[in-house]
Image 1: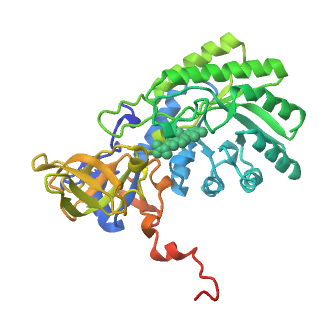
Image 2: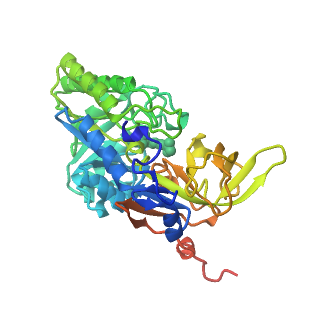
Image 3: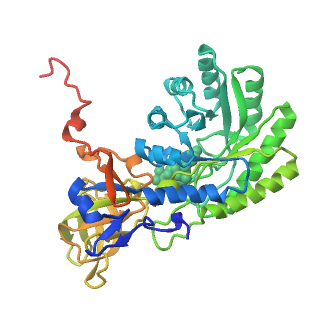
Length: 441
Ligand code: LLP
C-alpha cells in the first residue's frame, strides 16, 4: 500500500498506555505539552511519499519532482521536502520568501498563478526563481517589462488550459475550458508569437497544465500528457523553437475516509511514462523534461490535528453535537467543499463498545462549522483528545483568524521526538498589525 492510500500517518500505533502514537510520540502527551488545537506532521510519512514519487518516476530519465507549496508552506516542511530532492511550485511572494528562507535551491522553483503582481514578479526575478509559468497576456507584457528594467532574461513556461474535466469538486477543477487559469489552446500561438517577436527578454521552455485536485482517475493524466506533447511538437515546427519541458501539475488524491480509493504515484507514473513514450514517437520530438507538482498527496497523510473535546449537546430526538476547540478556521475544507474526515479519540482508540454516533462541531460562530458528521466514537467526553487524520494539506495553509482566534501551533514528530515548527499565535500576535489612528475618540 502506498502512503497516500493510508488514512493515518504510517507510524501510527496504539502504545502500551493504550494511547495513539505517531512518530513515536504519544498524542495525549503532545496535546498536554503543546496545547490544542495542534497540527502534527510525521517526518517518516512525509519522506516516505516523497520517495515513492521519486521511485515511481525513476524509469523516466528526465523528471523533476516539484512540491505544490500551497498545500502547506512552512520553513521546516519546505526544508524536509527540498532535502528529498524536490523543487517547489509557489504562487505568491509569501511562498517564494518561505522557500527561499528555508534554503531551497531557487533554480528549482516555479512561480505560478493567474494574477501575479508587479512586486511578486520583481521578487521572483531578484531571487532568481528558476521558472515562471506565465498565465495570460497581461502577465507576458508585465514580466517582459520587469525583465527589461532589471536587464535580465527570464525562463518561462506557458500555463495552458488543456480542456480536460476531471471528476472532483467543481471548486478544485482547473483544467476545463471555462477556467480562470491559463491560456486557452487557441491563444497559445499568439502568446508564442509575442514572445518571439516582442518580448525578447522572455525565453519559453515549454508548457504547463494542471487538471484539478483530489483526482482518483489515472487515464486523464495520459490525455493531458498527449495534449502537452502534441502542442509542443506543433509549436516547435511552426515557430522553429525548442520546447523541452512539460509540467503536468499535481492532483493525485488521498484517502480521507474508508470509501476513498486513490491510485498511487506509480499508477500515475506508469500511465504518464507510457503515454509520453508513445506521444514522443508519434509527434517526433525529443524526450522532454517532465515536471510533476503534487501538493496534497505529498503532505496530507503526514498531518493530523489534535483537538480537545469540550461541550456536548444532545438535541432531543436529534443530533448529538460534540464540540472541539477548533474547527473551520483551522480546517475550512468541510464547510467549503463538504470534505469528509476520519477521526479517533486518542486516549481510547481501541474501545469498541459504548460507541455513539455524534457530529463533531467546531467552536466558531457559524452553524456550518461542522468538522465531521455522524461519526461513531466511544463515549466522547469533555477532556478527551480527538485526532482528525489527513489534515496536512490545505488546513494550516487555508487557516484564518475568524472570531479572532489564534492559529494553532504545528509540531514535527520523528523518532519519539517532537519539535515545534510553527509557534501557536498569541493574543499579542492577533493585535500586532492593528493601529488606532491618533485622535480617535
Ligand atoms: N499545481 C497547480 C498549478 C495547482 O493549482 C495545484 C493546486 C497543484 C499543483 C497541487 O494540486 P494537489 O496535488 O494538491 O491536488 N484547497 C483545495 C485544493 C486546491 C488546489 C489548488 N491547486 C482543497 O482543499 O481541496
